[in-house]
Each structure stands twice: as C-alpha cells, then as structure tokens.
Length: 309
Image (cartoon, rainbow, N blue to C red; front, side, top):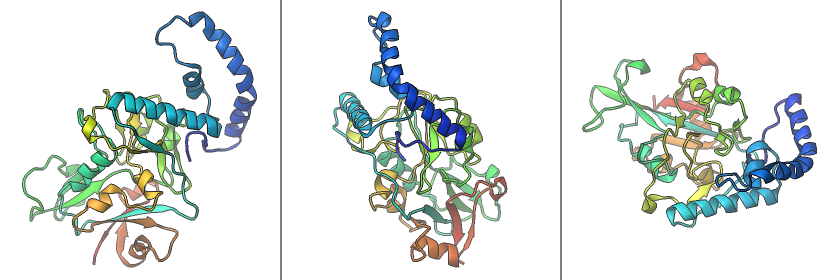
C-alpha cells in the first residue's frame, strides 16, 4: 500500500476521508488565497508540499509528481540519479521470516548488508538488525550482549538476531496518532516518511526495539548510496522521522530475497510466502521446533525462530 492508498480502519476513517475528498477542491483555492500574504517568506512550503502534508488522498498523477520530486531531491543531494519505484503488494502473498538460531554464528554480515541495501545513516549509525550474543543455557534476552567483539562464534555463546517482526497485531500501528505507519496486504508494516511527525510513540510501543529515530540528519557517502529505491522502503530519510526493517520490499516484491537473507553465509535466514504450502518457510513452520519472541505480548509476529532438531 503506497502513500495514496492509506488503510481504511473503520467508519470513522472512511468519514474522515470522505470529508477530506469533498473539502479538498475548496481547500486548494482557499489555501492558495490564505498563503498569498506569505509569498515572500523564503521557507514557505509549496502548495504541493502543503497538500502532501495535510491530505491523505493522492491521485496517480499526484503520486508520480511526488516520486519525481523526491527523485530530484535525491539527485541534487547525492549526485546520483535514483531508480525510485513503488512496487505494490503481490496478490496471494503473506511474507514470513524464519531464523535458525542453531546455525547463526554472530558474524553480523546481515547487519552490514542491510545498512548498504537500505541506505541507512553511517554517521550517526542506524542499523535495523541487532545481534544478541547469548550465553548457552540462557533464554533471557535482557542479559544478552550486543556490543561483543572478537572472533565468532564463541564456544560458550549462541546468537540471536532481532529486527522488525512485522506483527499481525502491530502495537506500533495502533500507537501512531497520524496513521503514518500501517500494515500492507502482504504483511509488511511500512512507514510514510513524509507523514511521520517524529512523536516516537511507535518506538515506545514496539516490544522488540525494532524502530529507529533519526535524531540528526542521516549521513550516507555519495559513493555508497544504493540508487535502487522504494518509496516506502529504502529511499533516504530526513531528520526527525522513524524508520525500520521492511523486509526489503523493493526487492521482495520483485521476486528477490531480502539483503540479509542473501548475504547470510550459514543459511540461517529463510524467507518466503506463508500462504504457499510448498514454500521453504511453510515447510519450516510445519516440521521444525518453532517459537516467537515475547509471545506473551500477543503481537502475532511473522518472524520465527527455530532449531534443526
């Protein structure tokens, strides 16, 4: 679901949208008149930016204009012409993820591949994946170490990566006061970076610590920018907004694996369509010992952990 296709959540949302649609035409004229006295203010937003900020409904033409504007901004800032697209969810697909804890060696290659693929800030560092180093025999994640160094795997430890669990009952979605984050039909919880107001309620609501906030302007070296971008995934984000893992939707909706799955040297990471009974992930759920993290909070995640035995 892209920016102009906001979810409908009950009668109140429909009424709001209907009201906005009816008011939009009059608002354009009224807004232009209202802004006229301020035409000499240097940082006044354009009419497009004003509408973009205050209204949810966009036509395909509006959306194309926004993609063109964002592409131009990226090219101006980084000197790289992006291939910015908005791939839609695929019919009959619900994405799921499984991680074999018995095979993960804690190398963190998934972390760095994710940073490169998703244009995450290098300074200050933003990383979607945390790898917990756990003592063998312990299941208490609160005693884990995320700052471990040296050779891995250590014989007295095992490793447990954590990222967004794409919950079916996502508390982050419920917490957002402006509906800037929502769940797509394929199960991916996305964020509209232009709608996010930076309140960070979603961060407080997430039981997995999976969301990141841009306290400063993100910094990505020009020669490290990935030009293959998705509107709701890895396009560069501004200061003051939240971001997180989105299952590399610009890749996965085009038939590729997430970058973390592709780079994993031990095959610990599995990804696929939960609705396909013949998929690898469906087979794992049917045949392995599988569990979810913090099951007691009732979020029904699409991210599973398992062992070979």
